[in-house]
View 1 (cartoon, rainbow, N blue to C red):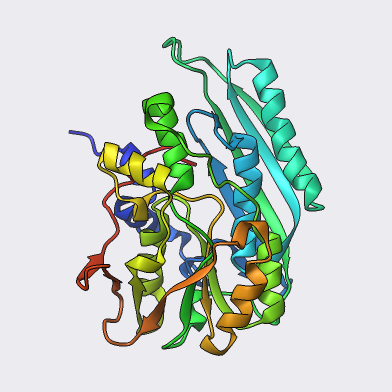
View 2 (cartoon, one colour; view 1 turned 30 degrees about the horizontal axis):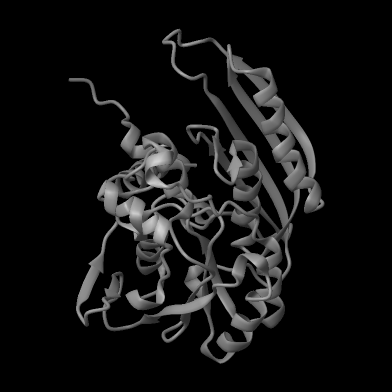
Length: 336
């Protein structure tokens, strides 16, 4: 039987991690890519560079659409390196038969977020794909390359974290995954929440003005748990410990997860940042971040420890210990 790529390999879990590793071994590997961060730091130019593709289905969901998602996701990837977003290149791939009015609405959503953040869309490309002829809803995909200026003396990255650094989460988890998932499986029955889709550069600006931020990640595919697992693997000789009672989950998200058998820790967010912070700056940083509309729920949820290197551990509300692993695949494919 032919060895082919599966949908599970693109959904942000362990299989995605293995696919990316295989691609790097094919000849793509270099020190910049091996950092494994959301955006590359080009030291000679003092800029961060990122690229991302967005395939969410359906393309419109409570709280946003694929255009807003593409703009926010690219802004947030740059923000994770402490970079102010400046320029985007925007590629649109639309299937023949897609409603023209919806396409204009998606482009308008993308443009609106860029305009609000002073981002210039400096290049673009549009392709129309032949119809699959299946009678299904037509597809639209967006790819964005983003360039930003690193604001601090050096870029943020998990290799800079130290033992005892605290982990800050900027809000409750799982809203985007639950919003899209409930829409797919019957939103009126499952009381779909709004997606948390939002740009986080201004929140990151507040955090960086305080100082003490060593690393940052937004919890997209694979959710909070996958970010913590990746950090544990890449931190230098350290592990991650988080406390379950500190991690907020809304009633709507919990209800959706209970109905579907999902774990909210692995549900995608599109407007939540995880920060690694020096302990001496944590309280001041929390006060600053909570002034931002997207950071009002910010709290310390854990820390970096030396006791179990390369492993992420959850201290449960009942006093137990649960090891967090990357799931082989994402519970909900095409979530972003």
